[in-house]
Amino acid sequence: MVIDVEHYQRILGDEIRKLRRGRGWTRKELNRHLQSEISLQTLATYELGTRQCSVVRLVELCVAMDELPQDLLAKVHRRVFVEEPGRVRVDLHRVIAEAAPELLPLRRWAEDRLRQAADPGPDSSSAEVSLDLAALERMAELCDLPTVELITHLRKLSPG
Image (cartoon, rainbow, N blue to C red):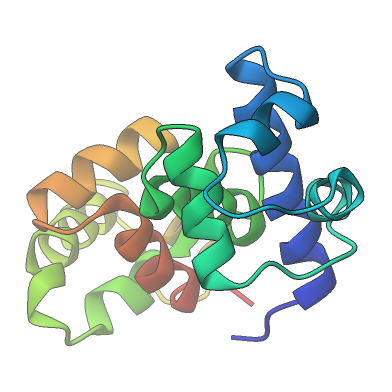
């Protein structure tokens, strides 16, 4: 998997800005809640995604805004790695061939789905499905995985 660092940084900045605005704070108000002193310009560049934020600084921002860093990063991950907003396309044949033991419930679902569609072979278009976030969350529960981790597995199984 290749990560577009600039795109990821812009999405991270956007999520930080949404979080701050969700609290009804200006950058100046956020700055007052931080443990260390940083300039308002630095905060702005984080939010614009033009400056990389260290892990420690990211945690400090999250703590100040009462957000778990892993939750913020999960939002960023979903936005960056899910092809359509809230959806992931997967090839059912690839799901069935995936050997990861934690994906056993997903393999069974894919086998059943292909059986119901009476799929004649691997080139059939019915072997591709698009899953929305609600379906992904339920599947993650069945596999006893965090949703973000399941999405990461499924992206590897995407068609094309």
